[in-house]
Length: 236
Image (cartoon, rainbow, N blue to C red; front, side, top):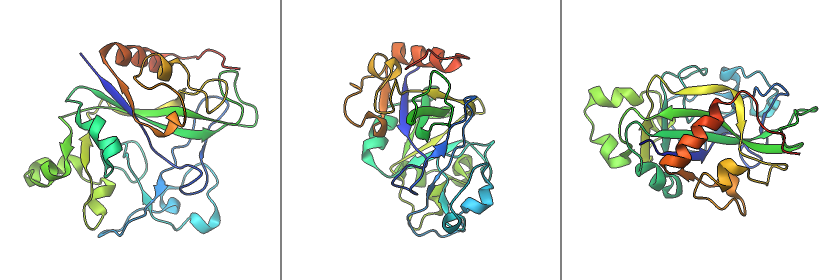
């Protein structure tokens, strides 16, 4: 049976100081965080991504930490993700091939939000991986033969000098960056909806939107059904 973990990614008010935008029709812009570590190779910049949203002029030439990478996103080759922090690595390493990893971010609301959107900002699922293989620790990854490491080519942690990931993930071709955002927030951004409070093991208390969210088989099935909906209940 499939299990799942959802992890927070993408631009926020700390890095780089602004959030990606949500549109009234549910579409959004995935804006990665800036690269904060030295790199051995050239990392793409915000200007290279040519995002359909305004990026501050003084940030346009800033290299980005493009992670997760989605094959359909600019400057990406494959579905990969890496993370150096144990708080995310540990729950991800508990998964196995065939399980799902969801990526969520905080997004700014449009001027005229739909009735299911919080009026200011909220947390939303942006995309998902179906894992092509069991997650790898950093040491397991570096021990792979070259012909297996190629499945992770282009991942931002491979550009870092030194390589620093505590977990590495590769997604199947069934992985995807969504066309529309899927809400995790309730009536306000700080309020968690049932996708968090009922289906995951998280309480939804405190800054839940920064934490990894774990889903057992039943919760993962419910979350998958939620993602596949075309409309969402009003939260106001």
